[in-house]
Length: 381
Image 1: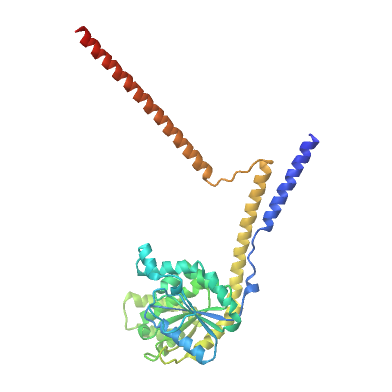
Image 2 (image 1 turned 60 degrees about the horizontal axis):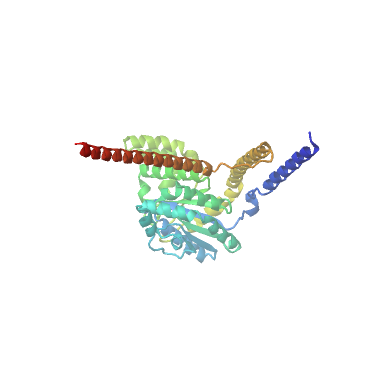
């Protein structure tokens, strides 16, 4: 082998290696959650069925934090609410015009709320950054969600917002229950099933807040959760298939009841607020002991999969560079195929034009011949 060729190949390999090494250095790795994690403030995400008194309950939380000299921060995520009984530090309505979204995308009320929340979620990292800057000055961040509970709990934007909070601060979910409407065993079981689904969907500590205790006492609900036989006795008057299903589900949810924190509160009178915040503090400690470890584990697994994907892509690039042997590596972006297709279409159009020109010229010749024949006939006859 020619020494010049050998040195050239060696130089190419060295340059290729330098290129790969430089690209390796450009890889952005996500920082550890522990490095940016802050124990304060505690995020309280309030969710609840429409009419459960969710917004009124959040108003009571704001008043209680003010009266107890706790430092609170309010985030409103409901774009369709006309007015709030409290001032929001961060309000989705300041960023997204709900009615304009409905008009522009031809959506109904629920579709408008979901789309507005999706648009807001794309910039939610800025919200987290604002709260991070004020973290040392805050004790609680109170988050109000849309009245249509499924829009937040089962949407991609709701998951993005929840995970963004949970990856930076201790995050607790509060499910507000309408106590007077839950006096029926079937309705109570429906609420418990939904609370269980929220717990497993968010993977965060959950606090049940039985609201409107000034109208109906919540002790019956606590008894049903603690004593299976009491709940069975309440079902005796109902002989429908739903009562049989509720009876079976109460057994399945027994472990759920044992590990959930439940308090009775009144958004109107303020009763039970002290017990509620004690449950929040206990849930925050539980988050640090249990939920954060699970979150870090899931995040580490996600980073590992991302790292494997990057290594696979880099190895593929390395092989492409080595196989090119100094040639130009053309990335298939689809533009080349599109240009080839356009060129082929132009060639076909040119062929069609040529055929049409030939046909037109033949027709012209035939017309000239016909005229000459007519003249010859008139001349001879």
